[in-house]
Amino acid sequence: MRNTKVPSWKEASLLPGDARAKMPARQPAECLRYNDIEMISVLQLGRIDYASGLRLQQKLVEARKSGQIGDVLVLLEHTPVITLGRNAKAANVLASAELLAARGVEVFECDRGGDVTFHGPGQLVGYPIFDLRGFSRQPTTISHQPSTVSHREEQSEAAAGSLPTWRKTLGAVDYVRRLEDVLIRTCGDFGIAAKRAAGLTGVWTETQGPSTLASSLRCGALAREEKEQEFAEGVSPEAKIAAIGVHISRSVTSHGFALNVNTDLTFFDLIVPCGIPTKPVTSIERELGRKVDSRAVAEPVARNFGLVFGSQVLWVETVDALLGNAVGVPMKVPTELREVRGEDETFWA
Image 1 (tube, helix red, strand yellow):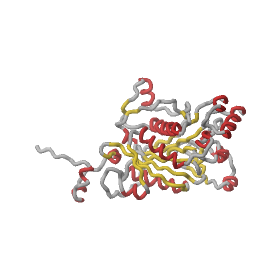
Image 2 (spheres, one colour):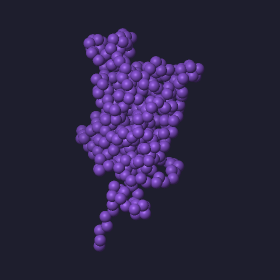
Image 3 (cartoon, rainbow, N blue to C red):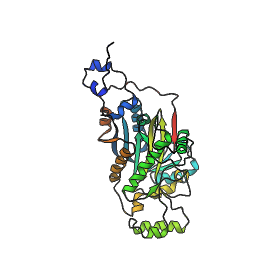
Image 4 (tube, rainbow, N blue to C red):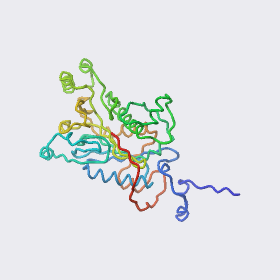
């Protein structure tokens, strides 16, 4: 009996069109690989309104599910907007409609997990559109932290103490922990000590006493004064520098994180950030006592995504370039996008 080798998609790119049409359908993970290396395409946009961001996410999610594109990280800024996740309480929006309008702030409900948060200029927002099944061969190397959601695999691994370990797929808990790890590493690149907080999602600045703050060379005078005033008023020294809220549908992620760079923090006075009234928010600018170009933060964020998710990073210029050139595979005419019903969905914050 003759053995017939099925050509890879890389080999198939050299075949005539009719021969390629007879190729078996690609599996989702195959879109991620180039020469057996995981690949993340990074698309950095400018400042766009939240509704446009949602439409872009929906388009990319459908393209990822259909196999038209590989994993994508979208980085951008939003015009001022308050978003309410699936667990949000309306009471956590403190400002009146009139005040929000006066400050030019829109309000949107969305399908991410979590409560209320703010997006605006000076904040780097990241939307990873990842198929988590593509990371099934990678070891889990991150720390296992207490979480507000039970996760059987995470608990069994922690109990066994067997890290790193191999998983069939990257679970929701580990995915969120990796996002936190990316942001903690990025803060560290700017000399800011950041950490996770037990039982909470997101990234927080390290606790420091007033004497430590006063002698810190990386804090400007204004930042030191504000922090010392918070200690005097009994406010928790742990401040949130990055928020996370995700949506996972058929293993494909959307929404993501918001890292405060040069954000006008007075906008957070309009809400109870993430529904946590006892912890303040902060920014890279406030921690350093100087402005940092948010575009300069995008590069270490992308690099740390590559490190944490074990992938190569490829920058793409436009959405059209992304949708027209799937990374590492030949062009494929997309099938008609069908309406997805009854799919498994995960929301996290």
